[in-house]
Image (tube, rainbow over all chains, first blue to last red; front, side, top):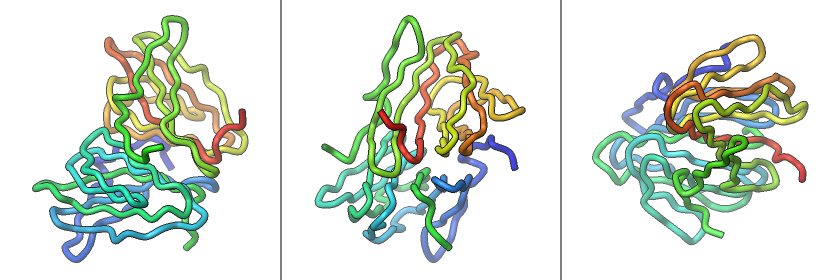
Length: 108
Length: 108
């Protein structure tokens, strides 16, 4: 497996819900992509034992973490520590593409 | 502490070596920034027990992971699994700004 990629190679679309892909997965961390068409949402949820970060690569979305919600666009970085509820809605008119790192990786 | 930021707020410069900053740190993961002026280098090194990912936000650099080396620009994502040697040199003419996620976080 190559250790080199570009987020754009992993972009995808689902009509029914937001798209999820995996770029890399190790023992300690998963690197994934979440793509939201306008209006698509990731419901607020939490991971009791995993830290997570969102890095916005394109588009704009409304991110909720705990009791706070903010609109975040490209270059924005959003942190959801273990146990803190978090979610996203694409509030823009174009695709929202977000890299996510989750540590440790989710079990399947 | 806010859970929301932008990588650009964390950019910095050091004349003598590349700049390192921390955006977020949890129990499971650290999110940091590395900024390289043209010609600055992070020597090849490894972390025996930590997965690491580089996400290039601006500029271009030559990334080494294991036996492979590639030029990577904005949008590129480079994976260094635990134990795999990795390093970077800014081979461009502008700042190279890279977000890094390391899991688990380094001990200090």
